[in-house]
Image (tube, rainbow, N blue to C red; front, side, top):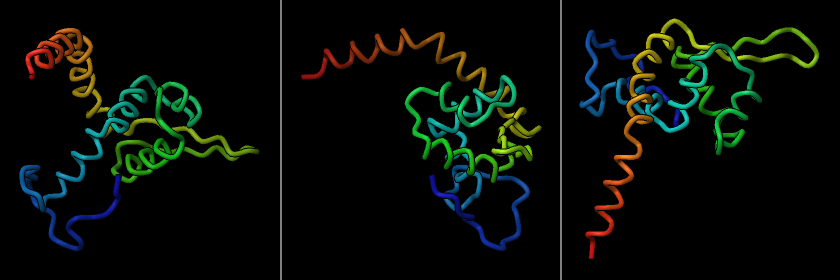
Length: 132
């Protein structure tokens, strides 16, 4: 997941258009809809979590990928990183107001996936059997 501005020092458009490859919305769409981005945002929908809690909750994610994706989501303003001045420092992550608004829609999307996974897998198997 590359973190770089696509429109350096340009005037920000009033409306974004993710269908336009030069629009910053395309980069945001990539961050949010990545496999790990979606799962991290959904996991944080239940409240603040520490890095190790997120890592344990999201099966299959490496520490490196979790760290990179969290940095990206923090940069995008969707996740807040809080460091408590303890020894060792205690770091937690939580959704910002912007991230909370997004995860309301994301929950509906993930609910649809949960409800229809069996049907989609059955369709995939039917399709695969029909291929020569």
